[in-house]
Length: 174
Length: 237
Image (cartoon, rainbow over all chains, first blue to last red; front, top):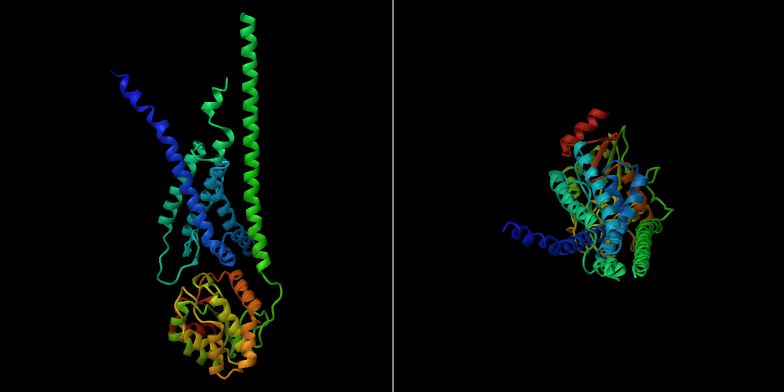
C-alpha cells in the first residue's frame, strides 16, 4: 500500500525535468538575444549606460559597453543551440550576479539611473523614479533559469545531446 | 568458461573507460569552443565600436578650446549646458529658461558653453540627435548657433521615427539667413559629425549621464527655473 504512492510520484520528476530544462534554456536564450539586440544598434550608448553606474573609468566602461551586447547575443545563440549548456549557464549566472551587484550598488549609492538591461540606460529624467527592486527581482528570475541549467544541463533538442548521444543508450552499448 | 567470462568483462570495462574518456574529451573541446565563441563575440563588439569612432575632428568656429561646446557671451561665471536636440526635457528647459540664459550672457554676467550632445540616437531611425548637433556646428560656422538651436528646440520633433531630414535642417538654416550652398554642403557632407562625436564622448567622460544638465562654474544646478539659474549665477559671481 505504502509502496504504490512514492512509486507513482518518483517517475514524474525525470519525465518532467527535460521539459522544464528546455523551457529554461529557450527562455534564457530569449533573454540574452533580446538584451543583446536592444544594445547592438548604439554601442556608444551602451558604453554610456555602463559608465552611468560610475563603477569603471570611462574608457573601461566603453570597452565593456561595446563587448557586452555581442557576448549576450553569443550566449543567446549557444543556449538556443544547446551547445555547452552547463558552461553557458555558468557564464550566464556569473554575468547576472554581476548585473545584480551593479544595480544594488547603484541603489545603495543613491544614483538615479536606468539599469540599461534592455537598451536605454543612463540617468533618468526628472520625476522618473528608478525601479531597482523590480530590476533585481527580474534578474533573480533569470538567475533561477541559469541555476536550473547549471544543475541539469541536459535538455531535449540540444547539440550537446546530439554530440554525446543519450547516456541511457550509451550505457547499453554492450 | 569463467576465464572467458572474465576476459569479456575486462574488455567491457576497457570499452566503457574509453567511451568515458571520449565523452570527457568531447565535453572539453565543446567548452573550449564555446569560450572562444564568447571571447570572439566580445572582440567583434570592441573592434566594431573602435572602427566606428573617428580619431580626428575639427571644432567649428566659436567652440571652446577643448572643442567640447560652442561659447557665447562672456562673464565671470561659466554656465555649461548639456543638451540633446531630441530631448523633450531640454526643449522644456529652453522654453522656460532659455531667455534668462541669453540675458545673463548678453549682460556680461556669464559665459555660456553649449554642449550639443547626441545621447538619444536610439529614439531616432535616422540618428537625428547626431545630425542636428553636427548641423548646429555648421550654423556656428555661419554665426547663427544660438538662433539655430532656439528654432530646433521650438520645432522639436517627437522621439521615435525619423524626425527632421537634412534638407529640413538646411531649410531652417536658410530661414535664419545662412547661405544655402555653404551651410547646405556642410550639413550634407557631415563636416562636423566627428566633432559631435567628440562633444558627446567628452560629456560622457565628464559623467554627464543625462540631458539637460546645467552646470554653473562646474556645479550641477538642480533648480532649472529662470530664478534658480539666476540665483546660482549670483551665488557663483
